[in-house]
Image 1: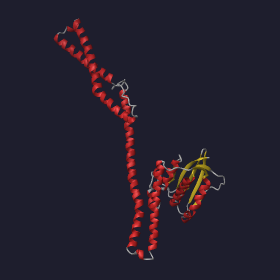
Image 2: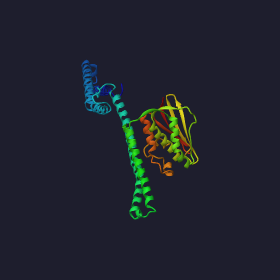
Image 3: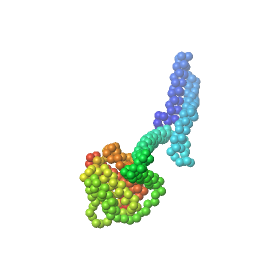
Image 4: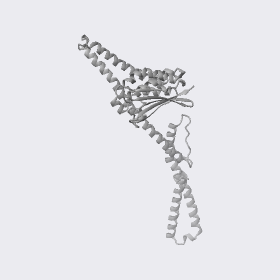
Length: 351
């Protein structure tokens, strides 16, 4: 029994009250008549009255505890328990020797769960503020550019053959950038909600990678970055949506080119993981700080070092990669060392 259990508390208090009564009775009897304790009648009266007082005290304390204290604890427990369980499963526990242990454990567990929820809500609120700020930043640049070009044309530039066509071309590029941002956000929303249907087929991931490399060869050459792919001829057949995986490879390779060092190298590697094929894209670029690495797959998130040095990226490519892989029931991962480079990887089921 625990010291705070209702029966033990009631018993302890009843014993104390009875002991005080006995002591006071004996002291009073001795004051009235020193030899009173030698007679049978006073001793029988003391035993009977003390026993009755003990029983009454025990019952009163027990009733008081249950009626005014433990009933309140039971109500608190019931409220917490009803939040944690499904409707119809809530049962009010009876007062027994384990009641306060149960309540204590429930309250402690509930407090821990709520602390985690509060922390998550604060993180979500911080993420929401950052997301709104990043969306505003990404949309503001092309919108301001469009506004500037249009105002220049309206102020007379439209009549100037040397600038009107050039400014219209720049306006078109800014509009295309806005469209790409909106399309990327729409794609992420569809992937998150599960509305986008995947066309799962069997295809050669090695051949697909080589196709993507050919498309990005010119962009890599501008930064003098070599794209290295395995020379093996044996196909690596996987299961997935080929066009979505093409997008994953494109986003990862473009990311490595954007943040890679000039005259650097991006290496694509494949690993047989028994039931899966692991694809990794490794660059020798600026790298990512350890505290920033867990956030690289967030929408619009770019590490401060990357944001300061490279402003052209929208910060949506890796978020799209993450959601495409989750739609396939797989995961995308990243590891990095600052000043050494970064590796992004994803798995697909081998067939």
